[in-house]
Structure formats: C-alpha cells, structure tokens
Image 1 (cartoon, rainbow, N blue to C red):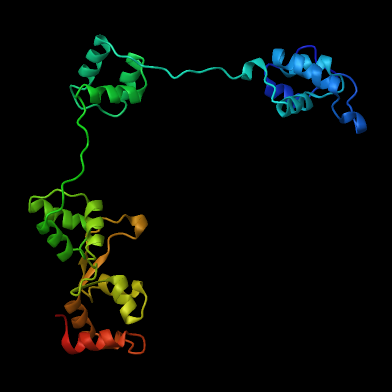
Image 2 (image 1 turned 90 degrees about the horizontal axis):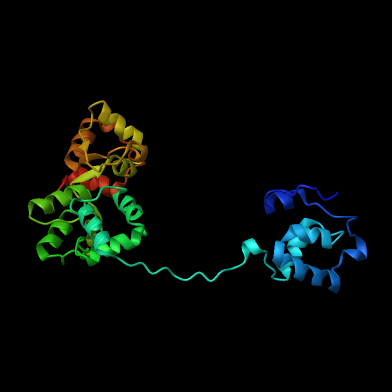
Amino acid sequence: MQLQTRPPENLRALLELNPTHGEPKRGPRRFWTNREEKLLREHYPQGGVEPCLAHLPGRSAAAIYSHAAALALQAPATQKHDFRRQRWTSSDQIDAVIRRAYQRVPARGDIASLAFTVGRPRWWVTKRATQLGLVTPRFKEPAWTNAEREIVQRNFHRPPKIIRGMLKRAGYQRTETAIIVMGKRLGATRYDPLHLTATGLASLMGIDAKTVTGWIGRGLLKASRRGTGRTSAQGGDQFWIRVRDVRAFIIDNAAVVDLRKVDKFWFIDLVAHGPT
C-alpha cells in the first residue's frame, strides 16, 4: 500500500489505514536493524508515526507505533509534562459570593454552579464554606439510652418503620438502619409468638403460600398487612396473621389440614394450648 499524499487527521485513523512506504518487510527482513532503530529514535519524538514512514521504508504505521512503544519513545502530542498541583486561593470577593449562596440551603446543582461562577473546583468551594462556618459539620449520633434499647429489643419483630415511630413518640430520633443495627447488636429476635406471616404459616402447615393467601382472599382466614413498605417488585407488603385466628381457622376448617404435612409439635401446641 502506497503512502497517501494527504495523511489522516489523527493517529487512530492512520493506524486503521496502516500505510507502508515501499514493499513490506517479511521473513528475516522483518526484524528491526540498529540503523532503523536509530532513525526511529531520531524522528519519532519529533513528529510521531507519520514522518517515520518516509524514513523507514517497508515498515507499516502499526509496526512503527508498536516498536516505538517498546523503545519507550513518545511523540510530541503524548509526551509527559510536569503538571504541578494547582494551589487555589480565595479572596474577599469569592468569599462574599460563597456567603450569599449559602444564605439559603443550596439545592441540587447549586454548588456546582457556584464553583463554575468563582472558577474553583466543587470540593474547594465546599471546603471553603466549611472554613467560613457556613456548613455545619456532621457529628455522630448520640449514644443509645437504655430506654431506646428496651423499645428496640421488645419490638424488634415489628417493621423498622414502626419502631422508628415508637421511638419518635418517646422523644428519640433514630434512622431505620440504626434501629436494625442496634437490634442485631442486642441479639434481639424477629420472632413474634403472637403473629405469623403467610409464608411462615404455609411452612408450618406444609403447603404453598398461595394457598394461605387464597384463604385470606376468600375471607376464611383473618389477616392484616404488616406495614413493611415492600414494593410490588418485592412481593408487596406481608400479611400479618394472629395465631389465635389461625387456631380458629383450623378448628372451623379441619378438612383443609393435612396432618401428614404439618409441623406436628407446632400443631399440637396450637390446638391444645392456643396462643399464650
């Protein structure tokens, strides 16, 4: 392939065309000689691949580029520069602009816009606002009190949203994540001796959960929603069934119970003693 009179606009296009000036070198001639490497060292740092094509007949653009990389040669456009870290400074005018922006709570995108206005990075603007006392630093949550721990441990079987409301009514502010973490630290159990989910009841009776939800849908088994806040993609909110309603259902609908499948210890305790 002959060298084009009008070279491509960029290196990538040049390598895709992969032109060769003269007859390509094959066989033993494919190995680079000392003279060729000397020419490559002389011309590649000055202009890159393109000027080397005329000085290295038989070498393709890709071959020149690859061998230059092996020799750690760099073209002018890719040579490394001594980039020194930018030191950002402030002024009375910049501080005044930052103060005006922080007089109200910044909305999403306001800080980025402010950084563009003052010609500084976003991280620098936030740091400067903190130094000026405009941003309240975040502190760790206060230590848990014994009263809070007791509420969490006693009600850990309930959804975190419900427990959060109970804490709020008692005068405490905790996130749902903090409640879950504290419950696990306390070793609290999510088991509720007075309630069952539809899935839990189905497991104890050795049937499919859809059978239980079918009983609920037909009004045979009383149930309420648990209030978990699960989305439809997660299967929706769970059914919350009182154990005493399960006992009443079994007594009234004994024919649907397959004694071969039920958890016998749970079943005997339920029928003989009922919920505690």
